[in-house]
Figure 1 (spheres, protein in one colour):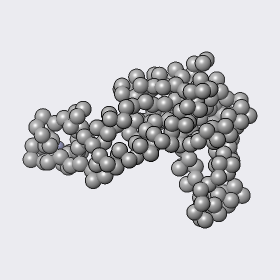
Figure 2 (cartoon, rainbow, N blue to C red):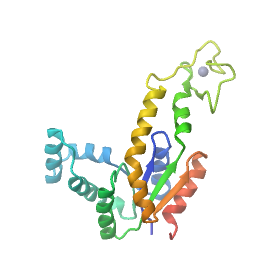
Figure 3 (tube, helix red, strand yellow):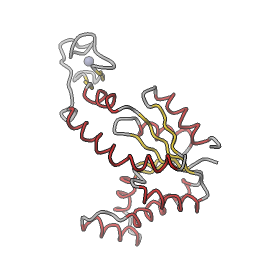
Figure 4 (cartoon, rainbow, N blue to C red):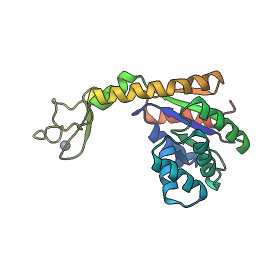
Length: 218
Ligand SMILES: [Zn+2]
């Protein structure tokens, strides 16, 4: 039997790619809280109306309501064999609620952390450049062009960097992520269900470890 996967990873760690592969290869739907809330906005069930009132009032969505949204979504047939949660749970309290839900659905649960040191994540973002002519993507740290700041194929084209790719933005995002996620990491460590996957390797090597965590007995 497949598991419910709580997929965790910092911005830029490659979590989205792994979620896509899990869907394509194991048929596990990728359930992100953002997508779920957006879908709810379009629907007209009593739960959706309740959620709409909360969202419109601008207050934080209470855990108890969020877990009911997760429950409604994961009760659909495509989740029968397990699913990948992304962005939920965010807190140990939500994780406790998920335990109850998972137990009721009869699936074991594993938390997978795609682990990449923050300094590497910073370099992935701040080193990123692309050619305005052909779109080729470079990274000055990991995949530099032959000559500084110009495309190998278009020497007259100075490489672009995205405006928000500055070091401060990414540093702030990573710090926030670290603060928010640490209690959750500790929660899953305590219950021996955290699998740390070395996210500095290639996509397939990372995937192999995740698939192992998802399909294995432990
Ligand atoms: Zn080019």
